[in-house]
Length: 345
Figure 1 (tube, rainbow, N blue to C red):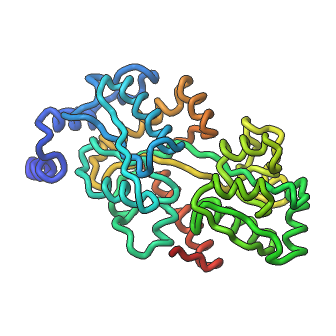
Figure 2: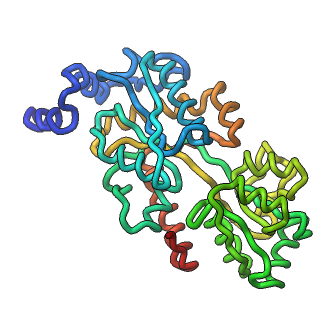
Figure 3: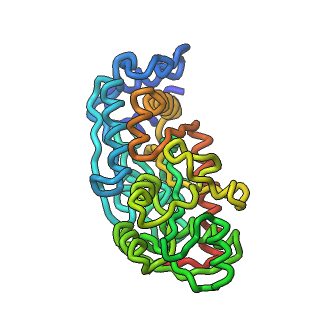
């Protein structure tokens, strides 16, 4: 046993000091987990180890992913009485930041705000990723998710999903839809819908939602899916209609907008989601402690309304369940990519 502990010290926790080892051992035998405290209180002794905790956001500052990452960092800093910062490492559709964390030491000081794209879409679309989701990461928890909203142009004349579906089936490849590019959540969700209704439409990829929404307003394209916050704000301008949300139940943010499931596409569900991961090899006691700490702050009463500002809802799960969730999402997207022969340039 002593030899095993010595090996673990060298391989996993080298250079972090004996205090970390002692804390991890104490945590493993603790009768009361630190996260049993109420959200907003500091964990016993604060966050263990030496140095600041960094949450890597694999996208540029300013977007919803970055905002939620900073919200999480702020909440954990207050809870632990420690420095938790966000570091933006954008590029390659989230691949640069994701790979950076995959290569980091499994000491709990470098964490990844993982996205649906980086964890479940890119692995089935990009043959030469610099990381392996299954082998290179320790899942901690799903953090939050937001549904998409189906928008239809005024030109289409569709007032609900059934009318839009009838138009699509009556005019194969006659309608067009915009996305932020091949393989994005907008693209794959539209393919899910088209497959379910047995129709086809022309894909018009853009470099971002702002461009596609401008063309939707200008009636250059007929429909698109977009993240809830952006889509609802756009629908309020009257330049397009919000026909449905992709969650199984109606959103509190748009109670008058039906779901695709209640519009005839039974059990249709799609969302954009975010999760927290550490590099592979993170000690099990620390994995469980971090999960409970993050779960506590994400479900705190003062955090929920700030998530809602970005149209996200807290959605946590155990590390094992989160690993299974990523695997299931990856299989689902792999099937979509295969059936629809999706490629990226």
